[in-house]
Image 1 (tube, helix red, strand yellow):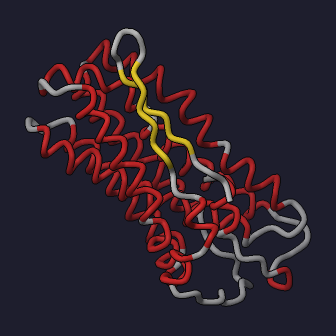
Image 2 (cartoon, one colour; image 1 turned 90 degrees about the horizontal axis):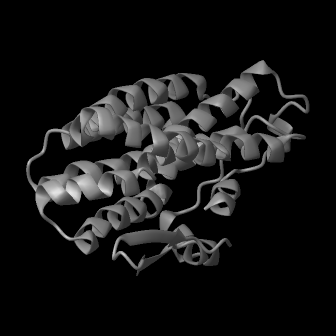
Image 3 (cartoon, one colour; image 1 turned 45 degrees about the horizontal axis):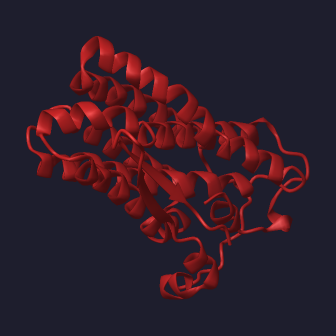
Length: 250
């Protein structure tokens, strides 16, 4: 996943300054926030699994399909959201993802049918993550010439930081307020942070037009095929499923 994001960056040395300015690092902060919220919320699935399964009377295998749908939409829609970001810039795409994630989480806290949960939670989070991750990360590389690797590393580290913070926080919110209220709180806070990230993201004013590559060619490329995530579902001795996502880096 990380290598795929880095390869989406188009390098145009003549269009960047060798010494990144404050604005460039604000873009890194915006991308960090996008990854922090996007994957932090997504990877709290394991914390919400048991209370949701209990209320809707569904098995753990059925619940695992939610995470599979989220991850599949996130990565398979990435070429299309990346193309939109190339045409219109990162702000409209990431802003759409921010609003979509806010609505999806708040709606998830109000649904009373598992099939609606598939739409609001799995579909909503998957589509919003696709709008946020690649457009935000790829924007970082357009600002840097000599420190691109460091900048991309900081931005992508938002995934780990978001997971580290969101999992215990969601457990605390569920214990105190219930899973429905926890989703509502996550919805409003995620929307606010992602809108801040949207405001920080921008292309450099001197950026050169990107070379257009048809999406069909991208989907047929070896890099894309090797980056398709594999989902391995295993059960522990207590029969509680653990969803493990492995991504083969190109």
